[in-house]
Amino acid sequence: MNAINKTARLAGFAYFLLIPLGMFGILYVPSLLVVPGDVGTTIDNILGNQTLFRLSIASAIVAQLVNIWAVVLLYKLLKPVNSTHAAMMVIFLLLAVPIAFLNELNHIAVLALLNGTDLVAAFTTEQVHALVAFFLDLHHAGIFIAQLFWGLWLFPMGYLVYRSGYLPRIIGILLMIGCAGYMADSFLYFVYPDFGITVSEFTFLGEIAIVLWLLIRGVNVEAWQKRVAASA
Image (cartoon, rainbow, N blue to C red; front, side, top):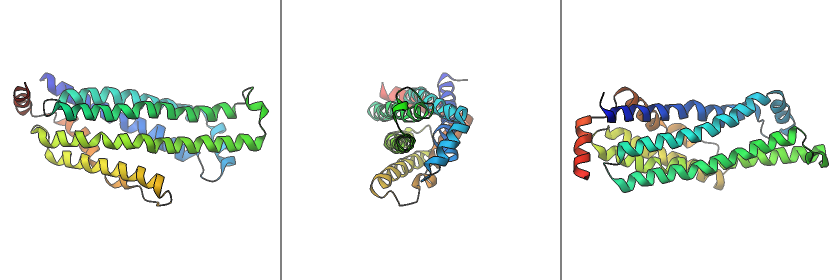
């Protein structure tokens, strides 16, 4: 197997890993345990499922490490198209990583409050409940801040795929549409929080397509080599 197709399949595998890691840590567990508007039930759920809650934190953190691996591989794959746009892709995704890392401190703070550290002993039950709700809300908002960059990196990546000649143009278009979906969700969350529609639920197909294509087909090696030669 050609070396660049090994890189392509590794990139596809790394991108694939982000799906279960992100869905479990960022979407599934919070939606399972956090009951909007009912902090008492939420606390009971977290206390009764602390291992699951901790696993969600670990999953979200590991997802960011995989993000770094994935974008480095994709940079190698797409750099011959345009090194500037490839660098922008890397920068946008790497900006999301520390935001997402730090955002998990909000969930760690929730555990510290519920497990009764010495500092927490100074708070009343009502204050603890209020702080738990506060940190959970912060975590939720933090996801939408990170999501700005999870969206932004898809635009240069989609553009590079579209222009590459060794990956399908339609996937590039779908990735750029995916960028718009993530950006719309973040904008709506902060400006119209009661909008009630998650746009990215309808615009994520490009990410699924690029994962499957890289894993199954790889790249057109001859076209990739021509791009490398042209960019030299």
